[in-house]
View 1 (cartoon, rainbow, N blue to C red):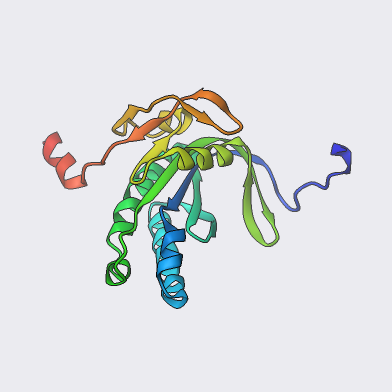
View 2 (view 1 turned 60 degrees about the vertical axis):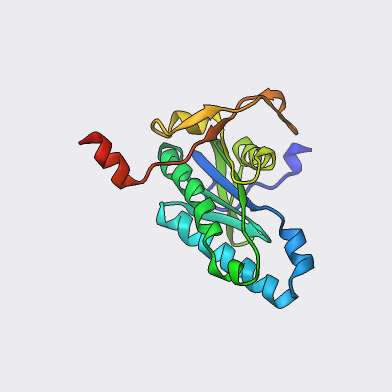
Amino acid sequence: MADLLLPLPGAHDSTHACFVLVDLVGSTAMACQLPLRNYQTLMQEFVQVMILSFEARGGQVLQHQGDAVLAWWPLEQAGAACAAAAEAHERAARLTLAASLGQRLRLRAGVSGGEVIMGVVGGQNSAYGLPVNYATRLCDAAEPGQTLVCDSALAHAGGLPTRPYQPLQLQGFGENCRAHLLLPLRAPAARAADES
């Protein structure tokens, strides 16, 4: 069967990457509560803010669908990816359009890293490999407001504040999966004051 499958078109070398998936909590309830046009406008603004936030930290958005956005960084830039995930929570909470519509946006996020194959499929960049699935599973397991980070991403993240998370049973990955809860990051000014 495998010999009947076509390879990805174009260049498709493997690379080590870090993935961040953010997912908006309660978007189905918002879709039920808000007029469709208001919901569409809110989702568009949310996705645009996430894209700009990730790109500002050096990430590239692979895909966005509905209320979820997936971005990637080279694995050695996992610290920037984690920072972008942390900032995503703050940026979503500050969306003035959401407040004007009586909504409070909260996210959950998953960060993973490892070897993947990157390629262009259907005119858009795509990534294939377990780290993409693992970011999804970590995001699903996170509570609202949390970012869960895998061992591989944390090892390349440069000493970010985390604490071990409870062992997780992640679909497709079995029981006792390890993760780390990303704690609030200090502002650069606060870090500079501590170091002086």
